[in-house]
Length: 635
Image (cartoon, rainbow, N blue to C red; front, side, top):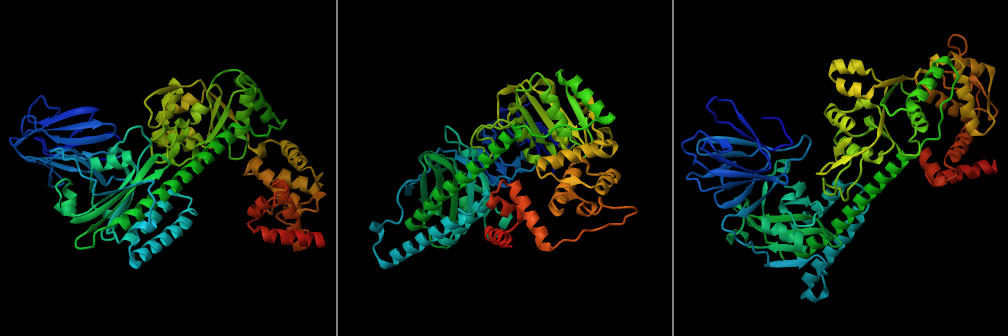
Protein backbone atom coordinates (compact mmCIF):
# COMPACT_ATOMS: atom_id res chain seq x y z
CA UNK A 1 0.00 0.00 0.00
CA UNK A 2 1.28 3.51 -0.75
CA UNK A 3 2.36 5.54 2.28
CA UNK A 4 -0.21 7.62 4.17
CA UNK A 5 -0.32 11.25 3.15
CA UNK A 6 -1.69 14.60 4.24
CA UNK A 7 -2.76 15.33 0.64
CA UNK A 8 -5.44 13.30 -1.13
CA UNK A 9 -3.99 11.08 -3.86
CA UNK A 10 -5.64 8.92 -6.49
CA UNK A 11 -3.46 6.06 -7.74
CA UNK A 12 -4.44 4.64 -11.14
CA UNK A 13 -3.48 0.97 -10.76
CA UNK A 14 -4.31 -0.26 -14.29
CA UNK A 15 -1.88 1.57 -16.55
CA UNK A 16 -0.18 0.78 -19.84
CA UNK A 17 3.21 0.52 -18.13
CA UNK A 18 1.94 -1.63 -15.28
CA UNK A 19 3.24 0.92 -12.74
CA UNK A 20 0.75 2.83 -10.54
CA UNK A 21 0.16 6.38 -11.71
CA UNK A 22 -0.03 9.00 -8.94
CA UNK A 23 -2.39 11.99 -9.07
CA UNK A 24 -2.19 14.44 -6.16
CA UNK A 25 -5.56 16.17 -5.97
CA UNK A 26 -5.60 19.96 -5.91
CA UNK A 27 -8.39 22.05 -4.41
CA UNK A 28 -11.35 22.12 -6.79
CA UNK A 29 -12.67 19.64 -9.36
CA UNK A 30 -10.72 17.06 -11.35
CA UNK A 31 -12.29 15.14 -14.25
CA UNK A 32 -11.77 11.38 -14.65
CA UNK A 33 -12.26 10.03 -18.17
CA UNK A 34 -10.85 8.72 -21.44
CA UNK A 35 -10.38 12.21 -22.91
CA UNK A 36 -6.81 13.50 -23.05
CA UNK A 37 -8.15 16.75 -21.59
CA UNK A 38 -9.21 15.00 -18.39
CA UNK A 39 -7.21 15.65 -15.26
CA UNK A 40 -6.99 11.89 -14.65
CA UNK A 41 -6.85 10.00 -17.95
CA UNK A 42 -7.95 6.35 -18.07
CA UNK A 43 -6.94 4.44 -21.21
CA UNK A 44 -9.99 2.18 -21.15
CA UNK A 45 -12.62 1.76 -23.90
CA UNK A 46 -15.29 1.11 -21.24
CA UNK A 47 -14.70 4.54 -19.72
CA UNK A 48 -16.54 7.58 -21.14
CA UNK A 49 -14.64 10.67 -22.23
CA UNK A 50 -15.77 12.53 -19.11
CA UNK A 51 -16.96 9.70 -16.90
CA UNK A 52 -16.68 11.09 -13.36
CA UNK A 53 -15.34 13.95 -11.31
CA UNK A 54 -13.68 14.24 -7.91
CA UNK A 55 -14.14 17.42 -5.90
CA UNK A 56 -11.70 18.41 -3.13
CA UNK A 57 -12.67 21.23 -0.79
CA UNK A 58 -12.31 21.88 2.91
CA UNK A 59 -10.51 18.60 3.51
CA UNK A 60 -13.37 16.55 1.99
CA UNK A 61 -13.16 14.61 -1.28
CA UNK A 62 -16.36 13.56 -3.08
CA UNK A 63 -16.95 11.48 -6.21
CA UNK A 64 -19.72 12.19 -8.72
CA UNK A 65 -20.89 10.22 -11.77
CA UNK A 66 -21.08 12.49 -14.83
CA UNK A 67 -23.33 10.11 -16.76
CA UNK A 68 -20.90 7.47 -17.98
CA UNK A 69 -22.36 4.39 -19.67
CA UNK A 70 -20.73 1.94 -17.26
CA UNK A 71 -21.22 2.06 -13.49
CA UNK A 72 -18.77 3.41 -10.93
CA UNK A 73 -18.15 1.13 -7.98
CA UNK A 74 -16.48 2.02 -4.68
CA UNK A 75 -15.35 -1.01 -2.70
CA UNK A 76 -17.58 -3.14 -4.91
CA UNK A 77 -20.74 -1.02 -4.47
CA UNK A 78 -22.48 0.84 -7.28
CA UNK A 79 -22.64 4.56 -6.41
CA UNK A 80 -24.64 5.62 -9.49
CA UNK A 81 -27.64 6.64 -7.34
CA UNK A 82 -25.50 8.89 -5.17
CA UNK A 83 -24.99 12.48 -6.19
CA UNK A 84 -21.85 13.22 -4.14
CA UNK A 85 -20.18 10.14 -2.70
CA UNK A 86 -17.58 10.92 -0.06
CA UNK A 87 -14.28 9.13 -0.56
CA UNK A 88 -12.42 7.80 2.48
CA UNK A 89 -8.86 6.64 2.91
CA UNK A 90 -8.07 3.29 1.25
CA UNK A 91 -11.20 3.28 -0.96
CA UNK A 92 -10.95 1.17 -4.12
CA UNK A 93 -12.70 2.61 -7.19
CA UNK A 94 -13.65 0.65 -10.32
CA UNK A 95 -14.65 2.33 -13.60
CA UNK A 96 -14.97 -0.05 -16.54
CA UNK A 97 -11.88 -2.22 -16.34
CA UNK A 98 -9.83 0.49 -14.61
CA UNK A 99 -8.92 0.30 -10.94
CA UNK A 100 -8.05 3.30 -8.76
CA UNK A 101 -6.88 3.52 -5.15
CA UNK A 102 -7.70 6.56 -2.99
CA UNK A 103 -5.26 7.46 -0.18
CA UNK A 104 -5.92 10.32 2.22
CA UNK A 105 -4.85 10.06 5.82
CA UNK A 106 -2.27 11.92 7.87
CA UNK A 107 0.26 9.78 9.78
CA UNK A 108 -1.08 8.77 13.21
CA UNK A 109 -4.65 9.87 12.49
CA UNK A 110 -7.63 7.60 12.94
CA UNK A 111 -9.21 6.04 9.88
CA UNK A 112 -12.61 7.61 9.24
CA UNK A 113 -15.51 5.15 9.36
CA UNK A 114 -18.33 7.56 8.60
CA UNK A 115 -19.26 8.26 5.00
CA UNK A 116 -21.59 11.18 4.30
CA UNK A 117 -23.75 10.81 1.20
CA UNK A 118 -26.22 12.90 -0.78
CA UNK A 119 -28.80 11.09 -2.91
CA UNK A 120 -28.79 11.71 -6.65
CA UNK A 121 -32.56 12.23 -6.77
CA UNK A 122 -32.34 14.88 -4.04
CA UNK A 123 -34.52 13.00 -1.58
CA UNK A 124 -35.24 15.22 1.37
CA UNK A 125 -34.47 12.62 4.01
CA UNK A 126 -37.43 12.62 6.37
CA UNK A 127 -36.53 13.08 10.02
CA UNK A 128 -39.91 14.23 11.23
CA UNK A 129 -40.98 10.74 12.32
CA UNK A 130 -40.04 11.46 15.91
CA UNK A 131 -37.62 14.13 17.08
CA UNK A 132 -36.85 15.71 20.40
CA UNK A 133 -35.47 19.16 21.18
CA UNK A 134 -32.16 19.02 23.01
CA UNK A 135 -33.64 21.13 25.82
CA UNK A 136 -36.91 19.17 26.09
CA UNK A 137 -37.70 17.49 29.44
CA UNK A 138 -37.45 13.71 29.52
CA UNK A 139 -39.50 11.10 31.37
CA UNK A 140 -42.21 13.53 32.47
CA UNK A 141 -45.09 12.03 34.47
CA UNK A 142 -47.56 13.00 31.74
CA UNK A 143 -46.25 10.17 29.56
CA UNK A 144 -46.70 7.46 32.22
CA UNK A 145 -49.85 5.57 31.31
CA UNK A 146 -49.12 2.34 33.20
CA UNK A 147 -46.90 0.93 35.91
CA UNK A 148 -44.68 -0.77 33.35
CA UNK A 149 -43.86 2.52 31.65
CA UNK A 150 -43.31 4.23 35.01
CA UNK A 151 -40.95 1.48 36.14
CA UNK A 152 -38.95 1.68 32.92
CA UNK A 153 -38.66 5.45 33.29
CA UNK A 154 -37.59 5.07 36.92
CA UNK A 155 -34.90 2.55 35.98
CA UNK A 156 -33.56 4.78 33.24
CA UNK A 157 -33.51 7.84 35.49
CA UNK A 158 -31.54 5.75 37.96
CA UNK A 159 -29.13 4.79 35.18
CA UNK A 160 -28.72 8.46 34.25
CA UNK A 161 -27.92 9.32 37.85
CA UNK A 162 -25.30 6.57 38.08
CA UNK A 163 -23.81 7.64 34.74
CA UNK A 164 -23.60 11.24 35.94
CA UNK A 165 -21.65 10.19 39.02
CA UNK A 166 -19.34 8.02 36.91
CA UNK A 167 -18.40 10.43 34.13
CA UNK A 168 -17.89 13.39 36.46
CA UNK A 169 -14.96 11.43 37.89
CA UNK A 170 -13.43 10.83 34.45
CA UNK A 171 -10.63 13.22 33.51
CA UNK A 172 -9.91 12.12 29.93
CA UNK A 173 -11.97 12.20 26.74
CA UNK A 174 -11.51 8.53 25.86
CA UNK A 175 -12.94 7.52 29.21
CA UNK A 176 -16.04 9.64 28.56
CA UNK A 177 -16.48 8.11 25.10
CA UNK A 178 -16.35 4.60 26.56
CA UNK A 179 -18.80 5.41 29.37
CA UNK A 180 -21.32 7.13 27.07
CA UNK A 181 -21.43 4.42 24.41
CA UNK A 182 -21.54 1.67 27.03
CA UNK A 183 -24.52 3.33 28.74
CA UNK A 184 -26.65 4.00 25.65
CA UNK A 185 -26.03 0.60 24.03
CA UNK A 186 -26.54 -1.41 27.20
CA UNK A 187 -29.70 0.45 28.28
CA UNK A 188 -31.41 0.52 24.88
CA UNK A 189 -30.33 -2.90 23.60
CA UNK A 190 -28.64 -1.33 20.57
CA UNK A 191 -26.61 -3.56 18.28
CA UNK A 192 -24.14 -0.97 17.06
CA UNK A 193 -23.21 2.65 17.68
CA UNK A 194 -20.66 5.41 17.38
CA UNK A 195 -19.82 8.77 18.87
CA UNK A 196 -18.60 11.69 16.75
CA UNK A 197 -17.36 15.21 17.42
CA UNK A 198 -17.83 18.39 15.40
CA UNK A 199 -15.51 21.41 15.24
CA UNK A 200 -17.00 24.69 16.31
CA UNK A 201 -18.24 26.37 13.14
CA UNK A 202 -20.62 29.13 12.14
CA UNK A 203 -22.49 26.92 9.67
CA UNK A 204 -23.44 23.23 9.96
CA UNK A 205 -20.92 21.05 8.15
CA UNK A 206 -21.84 17.34 8.10
CA UNK A 207 -18.54 16.40 6.44
CA UNK A 208 -16.54 17.69 9.41
CA UNK A 209 -17.81 15.04 11.83
CA UNK A 210 -14.93 13.04 13.33
CA UNK A 211 -15.83 9.59 14.60
CA UNK A 212 -13.94 9.12 17.87
CA UNK A 213 -15.46 5.87 19.14
CA UNK A 214 -17.13 2.86 17.48
CA UNK A 215 -19.03 0.08 19.21
CA UNK A 216 -19.77 -3.14 17.35
CA UNK A 217 -19.76 -6.32 19.47
CA UNK A 218 -19.57 -8.57 16.41
CA UNK A 219 -16.75 -6.91 14.47
CA UNK A 220 -14.96 -4.80 17.06
CA UNK A 221 -12.33 -2.49 15.58
CA UNK A 222 -12.97 -3.90 12.09
CA UNK A 223 -16.53 -2.52 12.08
CA UNK A 224 -17.86 -1.57 8.66
CA UNK A 225 -18.09 2.01 7.53
CA UNK A 226 -21.43 3.63 8.37
CA UNK A 227 -23.13 5.76 5.75
CA UNK A 228 -25.10 8.75 7.06
CA UNK A 229 -27.43 11.11 5.28
CA UNK A 230 -26.08 14.61 4.75
CA UNK A 231 -29.55 15.98 5.57
CA UNK A 232 -29.79 14.20 8.91
CA UNK A 233 -26.33 15.29 10.01
CA UNK A 234 -27.00 18.88 8.97
CA UNK A 235 -30.34 19.03 10.77
CA UNK A 236 -29.02 17.56 13.99
CA UNK A 237 -26.14 20.01 13.98
CA UNK A 238 -28.37 22.94 13.06
CA UNK A 239 -31.60 22.19 14.96
CA UNK A 240 -30.05 20.30 17.91
CA UNK A 241 -32.78 17.67 17.81
CA UNK A 242 -32.48 14.02 18.73
CA UNK A 243 -33.98 11.93 15.94
CA UNK A 244 -35.63 8.48 15.96
CA UNK A 245 -36.21 6.79 12.61
CA UNK A 246 -38.12 3.47 12.43
CA UNK A 247 -39.05 1.03 9.66
CA UNK A 248 -35.84 2.02 7.88
CA UNK A 249 -35.93 -0.94 5.49
CA UNK A 250 -39.23 0.29 3.98
CA UNK A 251 -37.88 3.76 3.19
CA UNK A 252 -36.18 4.99 0.04
CA UNK A 253 -34.15 7.87 1.41
CA UNK A 254 -31.18 6.14 3.02
CA UNK A 255 -27.84 4.84 1.75
CA UNK A 256 -26.50 1.44 0.78
CA UNK A 257 -25.26 0.46 4.25
CA UNK A 258 -28.78 0.71 5.69
CA UNK A 259 -29.97 -2.03 3.35
CA UNK A 260 -26.79 -4.12 3.52
CA UNK A 261 -26.73 -4.15 7.33
CA UNK A 262 -30.52 -4.69 7.67
CA UNK A 263 -30.92 -1.68 9.96
CA UNK A 264 -34.51 -1.49 11.33
CA UNK A 265 -34.34 1.68 13.43
CA UNK A 266 -31.78 4.17 14.62
CA UNK A 267 -31.41 7.09 17.01
CA UNK A 268 -29.10 10.01 16.41
CA UNK A 269 -28.82 12.58 19.22
CA UNK A 270 -26.70 15.73 19.54
CA UNK A 271 -24.07 16.25 22.24
CA UNK A 272 -24.95 19.75 23.38
CA UNK A 273 -23.49 22.41 25.63
CA UNK A 274 -25.62 25.55 25.87
CA UNK A 275 -26.50 26.58 22.32
CA UNK A 276 -23.67 24.62 20.75
CA UNK A 277 -23.68 21.18 19.16
CA UNK A 278 -20.38 19.47 20.04
CA UNK A 279 -21.08 16.22 18.23
CA UNK A 280 -23.56 13.35 18.16
CA UNK A 281 -24.18 9.81 19.37
CA UNK A 282 -25.68 7.18 17.05
CA UNK A 283 -27.16 3.74 17.80
CA UNK A 284 -29.17 1.27 15.70
CA UNK A 285 -31.05 -2.04 15.77
CA UNK A 286 -30.82 -4.67 13.04
CA UNK A 287 -32.38 -7.92 11.97
CA UNK A 288 -35.40 -8.97 13.99
CA UNK A 289 -34.62 -7.00 17.13
CA UNK A 290 -37.33 -4.75 18.54
CA UNK A 291 -37.28 -1.21 17.20
CA UNK A 292 -36.48 1.81 19.35
CA UNK A 293 -39.29 3.89 20.84
CA UNK A 294 -39.77 7.27 22.49
CA UNK A 295 -38.38 6.04 25.82
CA UNK A 296 -35.05 5.14 24.20
CA UNK A 297 -35.03 8.45 22.34
CA UNK A 298 -35.47 10.40 25.57
CA UNK A 299 -32.73 8.42 27.29
CA UNK A 300 -30.17 8.92 24.49
CA UNK A 301 -31.09 12.61 24.25
CA UNK A 302 -30.47 13.08 27.98
CA UNK A 303 -27.14 11.23 27.74
CA UNK A 304 -26.15 13.53 24.86
CA UNK A 305 -26.64 16.61 27.05
CA UNK A 306 -24.74 15.03 29.91
CA UNK A 307 -21.87 14.04 27.60
CA UNK A 308 -21.67 17.55 26.12
CA UNK A 309 -21.36 19.12 29.57
CA UNK A 310 -18.69 16.64 30.66
CA UNK A 311 -16.61 17.01 27.49
CA UNK A 312 -16.79 20.80 27.69
CA UNK A 313 -15.53 20.67 31.28
CA UNK A 314 -12.61 18.45 30.25
CA UNK A 315 -11.68 20.80 27.40
CA UNK A 316 -11.90 23.88 29.62
CA UNK A 317 -9.71 22.18 32.21
CA UNK A 318 -7.16 21.28 29.53
CA UNK A 319 -7.14 24.87 28.25
CA UNK A 320 -6.65 26.21 31.78
CA UNK A 321 -3.75 23.84 32.29
CA UNK A 322 -2.23 24.89 28.97
CA UNK A 323 -2.68 28.55 29.89
CA UNK A 324 -1.07 27.94 33.27
CA UNK A 325 1.93 26.30 31.60
CA UNK A 326 2.16 29.21 29.18
CA UNK A 327 2.21 31.77 31.99
CA UNK A 328 4.75 29.75 33.96
CA UNK A 329 7.04 29.64 30.95
CA UNK A 330 6.92 33.44 30.80
CA UNK A 331 8.04 33.84 34.39
CA UNK A 332 11.81 33.93 34.77
CA UNK A 333 13.48 31.50 37.14
CA UNK A 334 15.07 33.00 40.22
CA UNK A 335 18.38 31.22 39.60
CA UNK A 336 21.60 33.01 38.71
CA UNK A 337 24.95 32.04 37.28
CA UNK A 338 27.64 31.55 39.92
CA UNK A 339 31.34 30.92 39.51
CA UNK A 340 34.78 32.51 39.13
CA UNK A 341 36.71 29.67 37.53
CA UNK A 342 38.52 30.34 34.22
CA UNK A 343 36.05 28.20 32.20
CA UNK A 344 33.11 30.18 33.60
CA UNK A 345 34.86 33.52 33.07
CA UNK A 346 35.05 32.58 29.40
CA UNK A 347 31.30 31.85 29.39
CA UNK A 348 30.54 35.22 31.02
CA UNK A 349 32.59 37.04 28.38
CA UNK A 350 30.74 35.27 25.58
CA UNK A 351 27.37 36.10 27.16
CA UNK A 352 28.27 39.78 27.32
CA UNK A 353 29.30 39.81 23.65
CA UNK A 354 26.29 37.99 22.20
CA UNK A 355 23.63 39.56 24.45
CA UNK A 356 23.74 42.90 22.68
CA UNK A 357 23.43 41.33 19.23
CA UNK A 358 20.25 39.86 17.75
CA UNK A 359 21.88 36.61 16.69
CA UNK A 360 21.06 32.95 17.21
CA UNK A 361 23.07 31.17 19.89
CA UNK A 362 23.49 27.44 20.48
CA UNK A 363 24.26 26.54 24.10
CA UNK A 364 25.89 23.14 24.60
CA UNK A 365 26.80 21.18 27.70
CA UNK A 366 26.01 18.13 29.75
CA UNK A 367 22.73 17.69 31.61
CA UNK A 368 22.53 19.82 34.73
CA UNK A 369 25.18 22.38 33.76
CA UNK A 370 22.75 25.31 33.68
CA UNK A 371 22.07 25.85 29.98
CA UNK A 372 18.71 27.52 30.58
CA UNK A 373 20.31 29.91 33.10
CA UNK A 374 22.82 30.92 30.43
CA UNK A 375 19.95 31.53 28.00
CA UNK A 376 18.12 33.67 30.55
CA UNK A 377 21.33 35.57 31.26
CA UNK A 378 21.71 36.36 27.55
CA UNK A 379 18.11 37.55 27.43
CA UNK A 380 18.50 39.53 30.65
CA UNK A 381 21.48 41.47 29.29
CA UNK A 382 19.86 42.18 25.91
CA UNK A 383 17.92 45.27 24.81
CA UNK A 384 14.73 43.18 24.91
CA UNK A 385 15.07 42.09 28.52
CA UNK A 386 11.60 43.45 29.36
CA UNK A 387 10.03 41.39 26.57
CA UNK A 388 8.90 37.75 27.02
CA UNK A 389 11.37 34.92 27.52
CA UNK A 390 9.57 31.74 26.44
CA UNK A 391 11.23 28.41 27.17
CA UNK A 392 10.11 25.13 25.64
CA UNK A 393 11.59 21.69 26.24
CA UNK A 394 11.51 20.08 22.80
CA UNK A 395 12.10 16.62 24.25
CA UNK A 396 9.12 16.81 26.60
CA UNK A 397 6.47 17.43 23.92
CA UNK A 398 4.82 14.37 22.32
CA UNK A 399 5.74 14.22 18.60
CA UNK A 400 2.13 14.67 17.47
CA UNK A 401 1.80 17.89 19.51
CA UNK A 402 5.07 19.60 18.58
CA UNK A 403 3.61 21.65 15.73
CA UNK A 404 0.60 22.91 17.70
CA UNK A 405 2.75 23.72 20.74
CA UNK A 406 5.28 25.73 18.75
CA UNK A 407 3.03 27.39 16.16
CA UNK A 408 -0.37 27.34 17.90
CA UNK A 409 -3.68 26.27 16.40
CA UNK A 410 -6.94 27.73 15.15
CA UNK A 411 -10.29 27.06 16.77
CA UNK A 412 -11.69 23.84 15.34
CA UNK A 413 -8.35 22.69 13.91
CA UNK A 414 -8.75 19.37 15.75
CA UNK A 415 -10.82 17.76 18.46
CA UNK A 416 -10.64 19.86 21.63
CA UNK A 417 -9.42 23.01 19.85
CA UNK A 418 -12.20 25.10 21.35
CA UNK A 419 -10.49 28.42 20.74
CA UNK A 420 -7.58 29.86 18.83
CA UNK A 421 -4.42 29.33 20.88
CA UNK A 422 -1.05 30.97 20.17
CA UNK A 423 2.07 28.82 20.10
CA UNK A 424 5.48 29.43 21.64
CA UNK A 425 6.75 31.33 18.59
CA UNK A 426 3.87 33.77 18.84
CA UNK A 427 4.13 34.13 22.63
CA UNK A 428 7.81 35.05 22.29
CA UNK A 429 7.12 37.88 19.82
CA UNK A 430 9.44 40.86 20.43
CA UNK A 431 11.37 38.71 22.90
CA UNK A 432 13.38 35.50 23.13
CA UNK A 433 12.38 31.92 22.31
CA UNK A 434 14.52 29.29 24.04
CA UNK A 435 14.42 25.83 22.42
CA UNK A 436 15.83 23.50 25.04
CA UNK A 437 16.92 19.97 24.06
CA UNK A 438 16.71 20.92 20.37
CA UNK A 439 18.46 17.66 19.50
CA UNK A 440 15.26 15.79 20.45
CA UNK A 441 13.17 17.66 17.86
CA UNK A 442 11.52 15.18 15.42
CA UNK A 443 13.19 15.29 12.02
CA UNK A 444 9.93 16.01 10.18
CA UNK A 445 9.44 19.12 12.33
CA UNK A 446 12.96 20.42 11.82
CA UNK A 447 12.21 21.68 8.31
CA UNK A 448 9.24 23.69 9.63
CA UNK A 449 11.39 25.13 12.41
CA UNK A 450 14.02 26.06 9.84
CA UNK A 451 11.48 27.89 7.68
CA UNK A 452 10.09 29.76 10.68
CA UNK A 453 13.61 30.79 11.75
CA UNK A 454 14.58 31.93 8.26
CA UNK A 455 11.43 33.86 7.41
CA UNK A 456 10.06 34.60 10.90
CA UNK A 457 6.71 33.57 9.45
CA UNK A 458 4.53 30.52 9.99
CA UNK A 459 0.96 29.21 9.98
CA UNK A 460 -0.99 28.03 12.98
CA UNK A 461 -2.29 24.46 12.75
CA UNK A 462 -5.54 24.74 10.79
CA UNK A 463 -4.81 28.37 9.91
CA UNK A 464 -4.78 30.08 6.53
CA UNK A 465 -3.30 33.44 7.54
CA UNK A 466 0.48 33.69 7.78
CA UNK A 467 1.76 35.06 11.09
CA UNK A 468 4.89 37.17 11.28
CA UNK A 469 6.97 37.47 14.46
CA UNK A 470 10.06 39.35 15.60
CA UNK A 471 11.95 37.00 17.89
CA UNK A 472 15.42 35.98 18.92
CA UNK A 473 16.05 32.25 19.07
CA UNK A 474 18.36 30.56 21.55
CA UNK A 475 18.76 26.79 21.55
CA UNK A 476 20.43 24.27 23.83
CA UNK A 477 21.40 20.62 23.65
CA UNK A 478 23.39 17.99 25.52
CA UNK A 479 23.93 16.01 22.31
CA UNK A 480 26.68 16.06 19.73
CA UNK A 481 24.69 17.59 16.88
CA UNK A 482 27.48 17.10 14.34
CA UNK A 483 27.31 13.37 15.01
CA UNK A 484 23.50 13.55 14.76
CA UNK A 485 23.86 15.24 11.36
CA UNK A 486 26.00 12.35 10.08
CA UNK A 487 23.45 9.79 11.32
CA UNK A 488 20.57 11.71 9.69
CA UNK A 489 18.89 12.60 12.97
CA UNK A 490 19.48 16.35 12.64
CA UNK A 491 19.39 18.68 9.66
CA UNK A 492 22.67 20.36 8.80
CA UNK A 493 20.97 23.54 7.53
CA UNK A 494 19.08 23.91 10.81
CA UNK A 495 22.31 23.42 12.76
CA UNK A 496 24.04 26.28 10.95
CA UNK A 497 20.97 28.48 11.40
CA UNK A 498 21.00 27.89 15.18
CA UNK A 499 24.77 27.79 15.82
CA UNK A 500 25.76 31.25 14.60
CA UNK A 501 27.55 31.49 17.96
CA UNK A 502 28.14 28.49 20.22
CA UNK A 503 28.48 28.80 24.00
CA UNK A 504 29.83 25.66 25.63
CA UNK A 505 29.07 25.26 29.35
CA UNK A 506 31.84 23.40 31.22
CA UNK A 507 30.92 20.42 33.41
CA UNK A 508 31.06 20.98 37.16
CA UNK A 509 34.09 18.71 37.58
CA UNK A 510 36.15 21.17 35.50
CA UNK A 511 35.16 24.24 37.51
CA UNK A 512 37.48 23.88 40.54
CA UNK A 513 36.42 25.96 43.54
CA UNK A 514 33.11 26.88 41.86
CA UNK A 515 31.82 23.69 43.47
CA UNK A 516 32.26 25.12 46.97
CA UNK A 517 30.86 28.50 45.94
CA UNK A 518 27.76 26.83 44.54
CA UNK A 519 27.42 24.62 47.62
CA UNK A 520 27.58 27.66 49.88
CA UNK A 521 24.94 29.40 47.75
CA UNK A 522 22.53 26.45 47.95
CA UNK A 523 22.95 26.10 51.70
CA UNK A 524 22.39 29.84 52.19
CA UNK A 525 19.14 29.55 50.27
CA UNK A 526 17.86 27.17 52.94
CA UNK A 527 18.31 29.86 55.58
CA UNK A 528 19.18 27.30 58.28
CA UNK A 529 22.81 28.32 58.75
CA UNK A 530 24.03 24.82 57.92
CA UNK A 531 27.77 24.53 57.23
CA UNK A 532 29.98 21.92 55.55
CA UNK A 533 32.51 20.02 57.62
CA UNK A 534 36.08 19.85 56.27
CA UNK A 535 35.63 16.17 55.48
CA UNK A 536 32.42 16.94 53.55
CA UNK A 537 34.25 19.66 51.58
CA UNK A 538 36.90 17.11 50.61
CA UNK A 539 34.18 14.72 49.44
CA UNK A 540 32.63 17.42 47.24
CA UNK A 541 36.00 18.22 45.69
CA UNK A 542 36.81 14.57 44.97
CA UNK A 543 33.46 13.64 43.39
CA UNK A 544 33.23 13.65 39.56
CA UNK A 545 29.66 15.10 39.45
CA UNK A 546 28.20 13.31 36.43
CA UNK A 547 24.89 15.07 37.16
CA UNK A 548 26.65 18.46 37.46
CA UNK A 549 24.95 21.33 39.32
CA UNK A 550 21.62 19.51 39.55
CA UNK A 551 23.31 16.58 41.31
CA UNK A 552 25.15 18.96 43.70
CA UNK A 553 21.95 20.71 44.69
CA UNK A 554 20.05 17.45 45.26
CA UNK A 555 22.94 16.03 47.32
CA UNK A 556 23.01 19.10 49.60
CA UNK A 557 19.24 19.09 50.05
CA UNK A 558 19.39 15.45 51.12
CA UNK A 559 22.30 16.15 53.47
CA UNK A 560 20.47 19.11 55.03
CA UNK A 561 17.49 16.87 55.77
CA UNK A 562 19.48 13.93 57.13
CA UNK A 563 22.08 15.96 59.04
CA UNK A 564 21.87 17.34 62.56
CA UNK A 565 20.76 20.76 61.34
CA UNK A 566 24.12 22.45 62.05
CA UNK A 567 26.82 20.79 60.01
CA UNK A 568 26.93 18.42 57.04
CA UNK A 569 29.31 15.49 57.39
CA UNK A 570 30.26 12.81 54.81
CA UNK A 571 27.72 10.42 56.30
CA UNK A 572 24.91 12.87 55.46
CA UNK A 573 25.83 12.94 51.77
CA UNK A 574 24.70 10.29 49.24
CA UNK A 575 26.94 7.17 49.47
CA UNK A 576 28.60 7.74 46.09
CA UNK A 577 29.71 11.22 47.26
CA UNK A 578 30.43 10.71 50.96
CA UNK A 579 33.38 8.36 50.48
CA UNK A 580 36.59 8.80 52.46
CA UNK A 581 39.85 7.29 51.27
CA UNK A 582 39.33 4.34 48.94
CA UNK A 583 35.64 3.80 49.14
CA UNK A 584 35.41 3.64 52.95
CA UNK A 585 32.27 5.23 54.33
CA UNK A 586 31.45 6.46 57.79
CA UNK A 587 27.81 6.67 58.83
CA UNK A 588 26.35 8.71 61.66
CA UNK A 589 23.34 6.62 62.61
CA UNK A 590 20.23 8.37 63.93
CA UNK A 591 16.88 7.14 65.21
CA UNK A 592 14.46 6.58 62.32
CA UNK A 593 11.84 8.80 64.01
CA UNK A 594 14.29 11.73 64.03
CA UNK A 595 15.11 11.27 60.34
CA UNK A 596 11.39 11.14 59.52
CA UNK A 597 10.70 14.28 61.53
CA UNK A 598 13.43 16.27 59.79
CA UNK A 599 12.26 15.05 56.39
CA UNK A 600 8.64 16.07 57.04
CA UNK A 601 9.67 19.48 58.42
CA UNK A 602 11.75 20.04 55.29
CA UNK A 603 8.80 19.08 53.09
CA UNK A 604 6.55 21.52 55.00
CA UNK A 605 9.11 24.25 54.39
CA UNK A 606 9.20 23.47 50.66
CA UNK A 607 5.39 23.80 50.40
CA UNK A 608 5.16 26.94 52.53
CA UNK A 609 3.40 25.06 55.30
CA UNK A 610 0.59 23.78 53.06
CA UNK A 611 -0.28 20.44 54.62
CA UNK A 612 -2.36 19.20 51.69
CA UNK A 613 0.54 19.77 49.27
CA UNK A 614 3.00 18.33 51.79
CA UNK A 615 0.96 15.12 52.14
CA UNK A 616 0.81 14.77 48.36
CA UNK A 617 4.57 15.38 48.08
CA UNK A 618 5.30 12.71 50.70
CA UNK A 619 2.82 10.24 49.23
CA UNK A 620 0.71 9.95 52.38
CA UNK A 621 -2.81 11.01 53.35
CA UNK A 622 -3.47 14.27 55.19
CA UNK A 623 -4.75 12.32 58.19
CA UNK A 624 -1.44 10.41 58.42
CA UNK A 625 0.50 13.68 58.15
CA UNK A 626 -1.56 15.30 60.95
CA UNK A 627 -0.94 12.25 63.18
CA UNK A 628 2.82 12.40 62.62
CA UNK A 629 2.98 16.17 63.30
CA UNK A 630 0.97 15.67 66.50
CA UNK A 631 3.36 12.90 67.59
CA UNK A 632 6.35 15.20 66.93
CA UNK A 633 4.78 17.97 69.03
CA UNK A 634 3.96 15.61 71.89
CA UNK A 635 7.48 14.17 71.78
